[in-house]
Length: 241
Image (tube, rainbow, N blue to C red; front, top):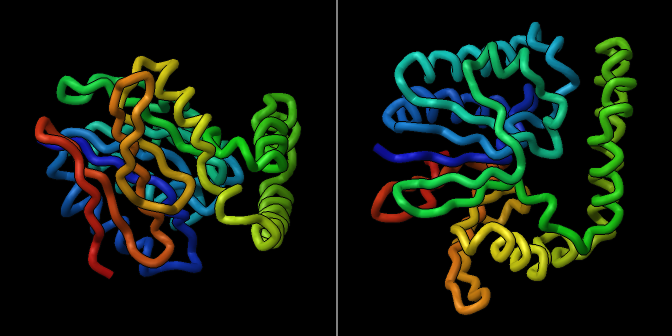
């Protein structure tokens, strides 16, 4: 049976067709796999696990729990949009939270999983914000606020982020090659799977004489897609719109 990888779905009420693609994918495709790895940004934003009463959030959690009940193991890695997902959400989904990065043996091939944002080291402003947003003290202070206030702040940050992207080159928002090389070297020259950049493709990197695959996952803004891996290798598959 295959192992599937997805990231950057950015599920939200404003894109109901993408939400439905996700539910169809879980029911028809992921249910036939041995494992599903979600490598961050499942949601457009996550204000805290006390937001599970939101209809979409609750439905997503129940869909993943149903998937696990059918025998597909579900693992979740934080992205930059849903870094506040915690144990309550994971338990509701029946999913395992995994760190970024995670190294595993996949059908005999060492495979490194990352969300991908730590590879974008040329985007200095983003890396500063990332360090601030992941500070435990800041997160505790943020989560202590009322849910409505948290949602309002997140919407403001989203708008600010979109404005800042307009002033950045595509190269800055993509991975930095030296960061990719360092990740591959420091983890023993594995295959690398990540999302974040919204540029699905297969890359081959030669590092210290080792040829390493790097797979970039689909984003789901227009239509969904996933990476399917088994003993014969990996391939990116687009979902029909």
